[in-house]
Image 1: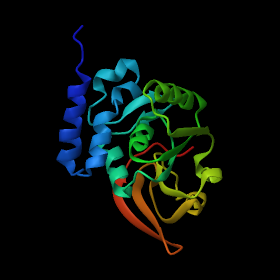
Image 2: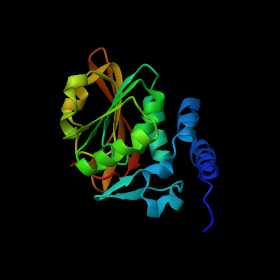
Image 3: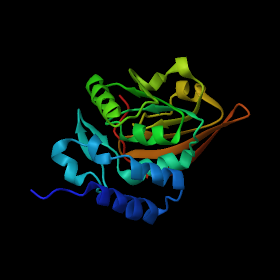
Amino acid sequence: MKEIDYDRLRKGMVEYQLKGNGIHNQSVLEAFLSVRRHIFVPIELRERSYDDNPLPIGFDQTISQPYIVAYMIEKFDPGPRMRVLEIGTGSGYQTAILSCLCNEVYSIEINAELAKMARVVFIKEDFHNIKIKIGDGYIGWKEHAPYDRIIVSCAPIDIPPALIGQLAEGGKMIIPAGTSYAQKLYLVEKKNGLINQTESLPVRFVPMI
């Protein structure tokens, strides 16, 4: 069996799927170059790890299309001193990208098996600034709030009030919301205690459980 050159595929993903589609934040691009996406994909699908599409990871969940992950992260503009809340750990790929860009990453996953698998990969790949909680992402993680950034990788019908409440002053949240066939991506910003909500791309995410 021919050995797959994952490094070459990852560089191609960054060059053509990300840079080629308008992702230009250098820190984000470098994070995508450094995190090995194939490690977060089931073994039987690893040769497709760097394709431009989502892939199943079990339990009716998916690892999102690389461009969408990059778009969401670039849109909410993370920084190296920031505390970030992620709703929906999933495979842990997006979590790992965030850990390269931010100081602290708090991630909530409702499926205990997915959380367990993600933890194993984080240890193996030497990501140490991530904390995972098994629980309901709709209510957030109040103990570590407020968060400079919140990113949600599953779609509620409406934006959860608890997440807005846990967003720091000057903070940003990127979240898909809507019904299964009518979702849109929203950027939520908190300025002077007021909430500004901007509509972005039409998207298709798994529903928030």
